[in-house]
Length: 124
Image (cartoon, rainbow, N blue to C red):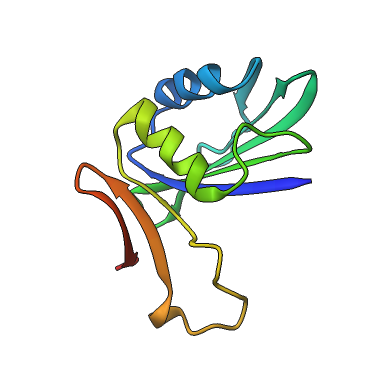
């Protein structure tokens, strides 16, 4: 199972749906009534994809978007982030993939994609 997670600044439900509709064969999203959390599913090549969206997941400005499935349009978080940036033109961040549980947070670098390009940055 592939599990990708990206963080999107100022995410709107309509922007999310437009982006995912470009990448998946079908999508269904609904609010589960908990602080704006969205849950849903999609399909890609007939294979189910789970979609979870958590607003204010990392500061009040970023929403976490988690996609899980046996088949996804991307292999890595950064590929997924690039796709989201290309569709919505809002800042997207993701883990560089080399962070491990227990590593010091103050040294943690994230990929940031925005109008300045792609850079590894400290989240703050």
